[in-house]
Length: 289
Image: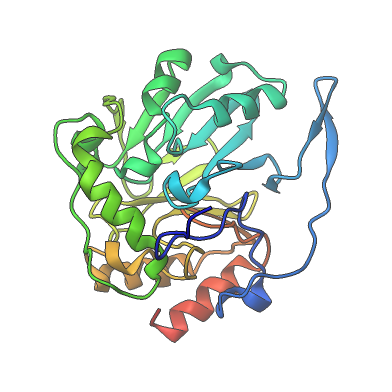
């Protein structure tokens, strides 16, 4: 077998969970997460990816590096409805469809798709899920025309920075961008700061992109940061190469650190399952990647 190209990681399935004691020095915890099972409508279901009550972490089980850089999406159960935050990289949305089935739900139960921002890695399954479910799609006004295919996403820096593991993804993505766009899909409803969608409160968190959104579920003490806070390849407020506005990026992080958070669903890397507020505050206090 030939050598791996520079910057490409060894094959692995998924990133292990991030714990507070190791988050800021980027070492992964050796703590084990116990698999939990319980019954949903008579169906015994594996809930090992449940990061908060009724909140399920979704990520490619293999080749995650090449599918958006260990990108994640999150499925929430709220009463009889499902809400989805971002749609992963793959256009067939099979990972999301499989999770819906595991929960004993139908695709028609997916009523809301909330998008953190208009980058390809987070939009892959959008058109498929809209076509199959008819769910309402929500995004910020600044991102809507990118999502609809009317404007290209903004470029990122390709010069070496901290977190160099992302560079091959960015280089290849830039080369293939004309041939690997997401399938366009119109946004149904524009949302901004303070909107409420089911259990989720909308936060405008610019910096990574001007229209970037995060979502907060106070009842579950869960925060979904998109790329305003990630844990791969660094624990930081978004990839350094992709910060359009550094000042806004850190301001958004400090604002999120004021919330009462246990679990954090991030855009790239393993979710934070405990002590979320402390993780955010430590990084915000440090003030640098």
